[in-house]
Image (cartoon, rainbow, N blue to C red):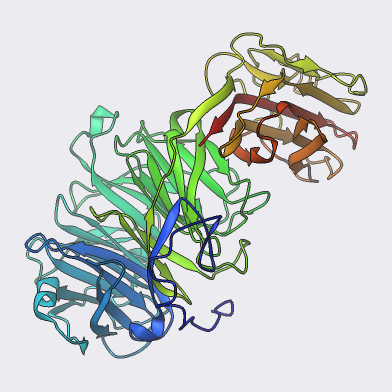
Length: 568
């Protein structure tokens, strides 16, 4: 709450239907996303914004947003996204305020919960009532479920007709299951309480690769410090299948499955956002043993990530101060994600903090994407992808393509110099050199052998460098360098140690990325990065990768795989 700024109540008319040109739509930074309209909070009932959900009327085809605010839920017709219409407000059950309100939709009914209001329960609202509304009004709920008081968030399984409330004052804060198959008569269906408080979750009828659980109803729970997977097919006797922590945990917040139920992306709300916003990548093809396979680190923003949803090959992420970010997840199986579009509703900052975009709703058939702004209100946008992305150059290190070790002849490392090959795994207080690559057998690694001790072939004595062959860049387009990497070191490293990526061009050498060491243990974990090379269009460039043990740390390892340059 102390981070909130005054609600923005201007610019709605001036910034309606504004295309993204030259990196801006009006005052909003953007890329490949056009602004359709803004409805400030003062126009939809006031207060501050929080979560929201959407509804498409199957009879009329109209599209609506149910927008959560501190004092109630606003109903907005967004069928014409350049001219949305506010229809009215459903106040909190007892008129009190909550910074957290959550909404889900099932069978033409909205289900609305609120945190920090102990007697709120879950409001039920028949959305078909909106068909006849012509002037804004104050609504009353059609029903209210009182099996819990407060709730942090709700999820819905539309295939089975169950609402899953989490963070309630029941079930030890775990999953409170509610049967809403008769929409206006919700019925308590049971609890998942053995792993305590759940912050958010997603529950599905499972059709993934783990055939043991085909057609079972499975909940993927985000339990503060773990991903916890539970079989809730039998609501009276749910079965916990796995409880898995991960390196870099801060506050496990929310995630979403890919369409094939084999992978999952997860947001951690308070992980370190240095050097960039982190999105955790999971392989959940074995529900009893999910694996955090990698982390996508944004090269451009350090904003706190909040909620994300996956549709096909794209992830739509609400990243608070950095707004809507759209990621291409085509390479998720090899831990490779890339940002392809964004719309920033909080231009003042892209750093850590709780302002701007709380949630996004990308599921409308029309392509309209809704963003709920804490201070801004409802922002409607549309992805305009522009030119297709093509690969200019790539290297998976399965064959030798001409990378040069110690290209300037000034390296000082005595061991652990860069080499291409099949790496051996080493461990020392956790994974250091990874024995797995992103793709294929080989990668580019600092001393690929393991030796008899973890530190036998790590980087020692200073700097080791490796440089790519010359790459001719096209003369136009948005050019991006993408690669997977990791840096691992022991707890006696320092900020003098580093992993670094630079581009060598006609004007010299420009550093693109630097990951410094620290006086704490850092385990190896594949991470993706992407950097803009558009400034060097038309030139021949080389990619320079460096790793340095300049503090005399006893153990330091680094690796690179799947380097590509793309053009859009």
